Length: 412
Image (tube, rainbow, N blue to C red; front, side):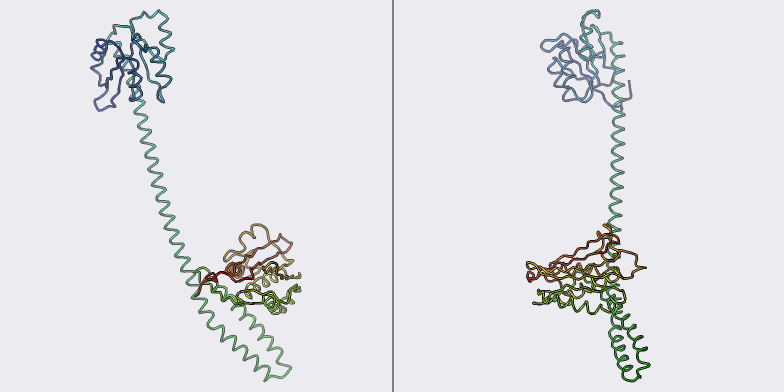
């Protein structure tokens, strides 16, 4: 057979005659086998359930369950693989019992008394097959285990790499926001005195120069003032974006804030820009729509919406409608410009998101992001509608009543 360190195979010997069991043991003694003995078919069925056998050698004629019935039950209720079975009998081969043996699941037949060399030759074949199969199964199990270990190691490395990249990304975002905050404050510092200087220069021009020279210089000053205001808005947007990200957007809510007055005032400030863009501003605004809001932040929202409408709807009227229904203020700004598709609508309110290329329309992509965060902080919501080439409509809905205590946003 094989070397002593090979897989030990178990063989089940089933016979009601102790002398026949002892003879089988003697014949198979040269082999390094684990021989298990059963004196009946019932005992053999129990042993098959408990142990994996390379082969079963079973007598046909036994009291109780005979060999044929025991074999049929083994096959019907056996494990995932069928166990090779060799019948032992004194019945001549030419009888119908041979057919019954094969039908019941036997793979071979030996006549008693068993010839030792023939027995060992047949047992050797089935034990070798069993050992080869078990060796292959173990190799497959080891391969699968190694595959699992490799996959787990790869998964662990991938997770560690993901965590590392996520930590780096968070740190990069933190540093970026910190830089934006510092840069915004530093940029804002000289803007206020610059605006005041422009105002003083304008006053001196109006006072010192004659009527023929003043208009030209005043035009230059007005252009410079517009650029200062634009830069101020950009810097303020950066500051607000960093405050929102860090949860420090401040709201100063007051009672009886008139949203209608805010809309009219912002629209009046855009009259010059609207005329330049050939965008008539059409207002449908009542005298009063009151609520507990932050007037400065609402002015910021309305400014962002009108600025977008004039920027993307040049050459078309901009319609502004405000109403109050059942304690909810609803502001609608509609333009007739380039519109947007579903993919743009899905990301329009994201930070640094733009509906079109910044090369054509400029801006930081923060206005709608900030507007949405302000509206949310006030307990409302904002959404956009539109199709390509058919303009866009932005709708803001705000509750007029006061929000619950402690829900007014964070301080700086």
